[in-house]
Amino acid sequence: QVPTESIPTLLLPIWGYIVAFFALAPVITVIAFSRNILGYLISYFKTNHEEEYDLNKLGKTLTLYIGILAGMLSAATTLLEVLPVPYNEYVATAIAIGASIIVVLDLVKKQLADLGQAIRA
Image (tube, rainbow, N blue to C red; front, side):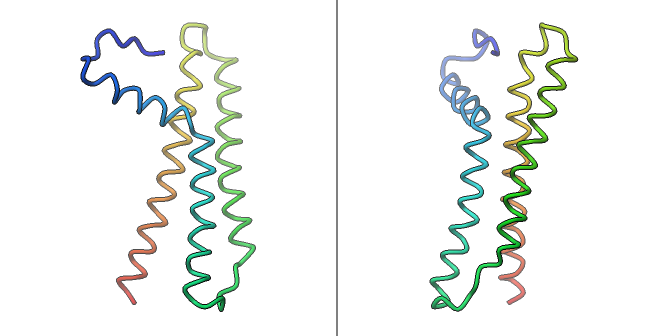
């Protein structure tokens, strides 16, 4: 919990949105995974059902996101045991921020790859 007394009143709603965004790391992960499936479905229907979904890609995506969450949970557990009391209350926030950043970077990387592929075509 960050003290909000020093934040100007006009910026308090924005600060609330930032905190809510990073507190929802698992939800962001589910949204990102769902977006990958939606991308496949859009492609599937655009090609008149000619494209088959590669289950290996589904497994890789699922493994990546589960790995991110498991790694962050493991790091949080370790840090909670190691850090002294005044600092360990910030661990959950730091882990949520880290997981969110990783998932968002993965989405950005995917979009850049799609853009590069579209430019080459």
